[in-house]
Length: 177
Image (cartoon, rainbow, N blue to C red; front, side, top):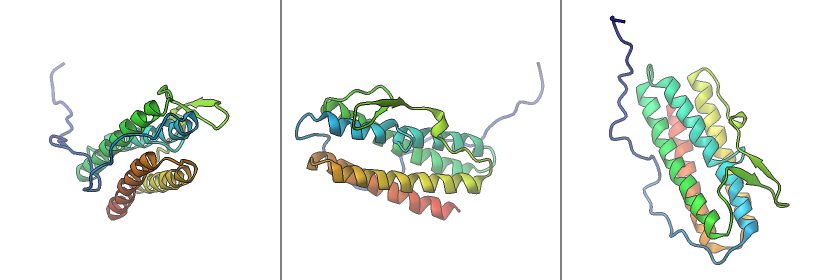
């Protein structure tokens, strides 16, 4: 079939994670602790989680890239940072003796597998960004609550560093509004 092709000219070449310009602490733990691993599994793939954030940002980026390339690039850069958070949480979970299987585990060991039903997918750009800000705030609150339950300074140092990125993301998203 000959004719004009539709094309997305928004180039993501050279895209980089958007995050605070600070190093991450080493990924280490004081010892195996399944309870801590279960807490982090919620941050990894629960309803408020890095997996949910990545998926929501990529979805929004895809839908905005044709008409709002600059905003789409920002969302992709934030998604890349969230991917790094997911990877770091995964390493911590394994070190703590937990499993990486996309199941968020509660204190009693019961689990719930990640689902796209956790995502907020509004149609208009402003509502997308507001939903992203709300998700970042919820993630910070959850990390802070988990840090109070985790008595491992190595794990908490990583969570504190992740929170810095989430706060930076909120600042950028507010500027996009």
